[in-house]
Amino acid sequence: MIARRMRLIDSSGIRKVFDLARSMKNPINLSIGQPDFDVPENVKRAAIENIMAGRNRYTVTQGIPELHEGVREHLKRTRGVDAQNILITSGVSGGLVLAFLVLVDEGDEVAIPDPYFVMYKHLTNLVGGRPRFIDTYPDFRLRKEALRAAITSRTKVLVLNSPCNPTGITYTREELEGVAEVAREHDLLVLSDEIYDCFCYLDNCPSMASIYPKTLLMGGFSKSHAMTGWRLGYATGPADVIAEMTKLQQYSFVCAPSFAQYAGVTALEYPLDGACEAYRAKRDLIYNGLKDNFDVQKPEGAFYIFPKAPWGTDQEFVAEAIKNNVLIIPGSVFSERATHFRISYAAPDNTIKQGIDVLNRLASHRR
Ligand code: PLP
Image (cartoon, rainbow, N blue to C red; front, side, top):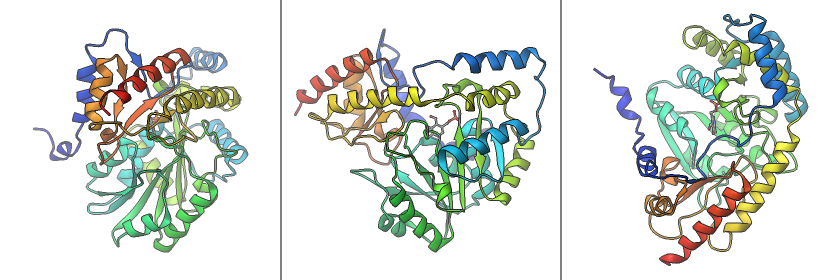
């Protein structure tokens, strides 16, 4: 009964972790992919006020003009991006579904730096494309030579995710310029998922869209404003791509949630520097706590760190951590390799410190 394409989506890795985690009573939880703060008060109030004012109906498919204006101004001011064509999406996830359906034909290759956010692989497979992974271990930087070597005559899209889930690696402007040089040689469309742009610990967070015009930039409110449940994001890029995504949104998601769109206008007016500074301190806490006992890169963005398992496979080390009440995610969920694990430090400092203690103890066990 179930369509064949569903066989291409394998969720066994993450299921195994949650099966193991079920027995945990009060875990030291370092697995969560969302901030540990709540939606800012004024944004919540804006959502409630708009619901009470009756703004509960379908909006136009492309999203309300006020939010277009807000996103345009935000991208100009914070990222130096001139966003001409915008589609408001049901989260970045909604935007990704539309983008893959619109861009990737059967047999097209999608270049994906590994480690990667899981949706890229599964959506590529779902639409009949072929993921072409670019191994970026051990430092997780994307070098133009590696990118060039991965490109074939079938490559259509390159997916970038900076700051990156799960590594926290954030590309510098020079790195992005190198990537753009190769993309230009092959006329690739770059799908740049910049959902973590608000958590960037470099001096500035360069956007691929400010460097390479054929970029489909995606961003959202899930991470910056902890609005994960409200399902709000945006896409901007080449006119024809945005037009086709809008057409497909009409026949799928219809529109992003109306109250969230109105509240999103308020969200964009809310300064986020405090959250970024707080998370930079958490990044320092986790990195300094692990660096002596783990092979680990210092993240420059997002709220994840991706150390190498000090012994065993990723699954074996994670199983041991779970036995010791620390919940982390095996790297093979995000990678073709099974050697690392992902920690989310979007957690209270005390939880992070407890996690560091346990992980350091486990690292010394079976050396
Ligand atoms: N892209 C990346 C890299 C993510 O880590 C996530 C969520 O974890 C998403 C997209 C999905 O975001 P949204 O809640 O806007 O759908």
